[in-house]
Length: 290
Image: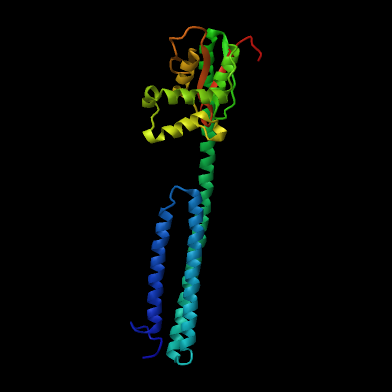
């Protein structure tokens, strides 16, 4: 029996069997990696690069091991073994050509798939903008119709995460009361902290989150603060003894502090004004040019 006879104990057959197992193991690893990024384009690209690297490393190692085996047996192979090695090399080249053909086919398929996905993403984005614009326009129209009753119109407040407090600040200035949005944040936080039993059931937080909530209410968005909502409006209303009316589309206006006399503070609530989400604006008398 010659050195390269392909029986179960020949070095070549053992090496080929090991290579076959390693390729099978790599394919299983590749399948697992691809399954991890089915819906993540960025991760998918990273995985494709990783797969290519793993395949290349395995092919290079296999090639190196085969070349080393060839070197080991060169001095003792017979004509029969030469013929067998030639046949093996031909098979290997054919396999490499087949792999290259499959790789090119896969790359072409991936390019078409990526191009299709980009087109679909662009269409989806355009549709989302169109939908948002349509909702924004309808919402603004409905809010203005409600404001017409008060002979008022929307006064734009910057969408910086502090819009609720700044809209109240702007309203108070029309009543001759001066508080900055930052000051109103601290007022709301302190009032809620001092009346925790009244407010806590409506905050939708756990007990150990209360201190964090107070911090986020007292600080501006730029300093780690959170957006304001109904609890903060209630706290400001109670502290100032002022009625606050929130004008919104689709639903009835929200009135906070109905027990307080005097002209109400009138602000507006928007769900579709900006892509970021909820937003509050102030209002002014139609004839006002502030």
